[in-house]
Image (cartoon, rainbow, N blue to C red; front, side, top):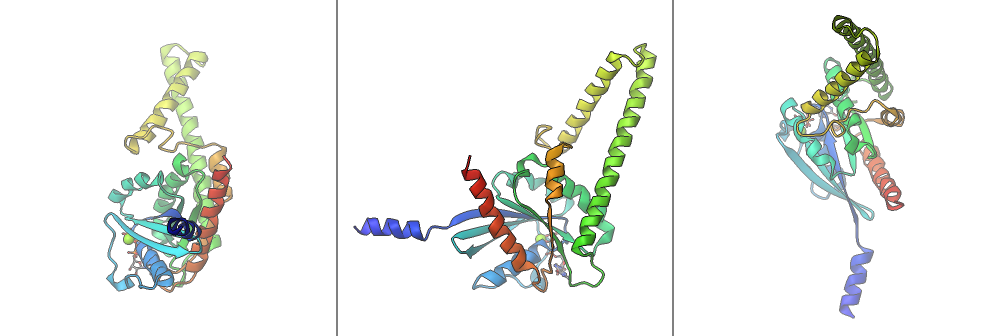
Length: 263
Ligand SMILES: Nc1nc2c(ncn2[C@@H]2O[C@H](COP(=O)(O)OP(=O)(O)OP(=O)(O)O)[C@@H](O)[C@H]2O)c(=O)[nH]1
Ligand SMILES: [Mg+2]
């Protein structure tokens, strides 16, 4: 009987566990955000901002919500450390990408890094939140401005990619002419083969991943992802927007689980 009650109690008090990775450039405020979340949700407060230094590796934290435990993995954002991020992708249920909304000088770098995250096939169906941090600093970009900045970067990226293709095609035609292939089918075949090489070299940047894993997806999935991208403003220092972000995670991980359960 005791075991029956113990089992029943364990079943009724069981919590679903989800892992959330927090990534973004160094100095974006990821650790400050995690420590603020701990302070707001746990009986023991997180580390005060003045004690936080750059993260080398990871910081972890967990919070308890109704029937749910969220485990956070705050990963270092310095350039050399970013290569560890993908190692967490398989095990996580949601991603928070934190950006420093007052560091306009690094926006382009931010978007390049964010774009790789968006393109990563292993994250394709996971909830992804773009958090525009440091809203307490006057002059920081608003949520609308952050979105506009990314859209503008994205448009110029597409233009660059199209120009690259045109240039490549021109080169191939030139080569084809020199080889006596002209603009015939062989020339086209060569262009395709070179395109495949480009895919591989992009993959090579990501270490031992296949081209697919490295995230070379310019198709509908990426567009869909971007169209439904959620951007929120926050101040990790003051705590504004933090509860909204946690609520967003809470709802989205459970919805994602329900969709998963259907298959
Ligand atoms: N004004 C303001 N400063 C912030 C905020 N969040 C973080 N900071 C400051 O930004 C600096 C970097 O914060 P961290 O939390 O260490 O940044 P990080 O993203 O974890 O950086 P790495 O660990 O190097 O990847 C610190 O000086 C923080 O006090 C914020 O919301 N507002
Ligand atoms: Mg940190």
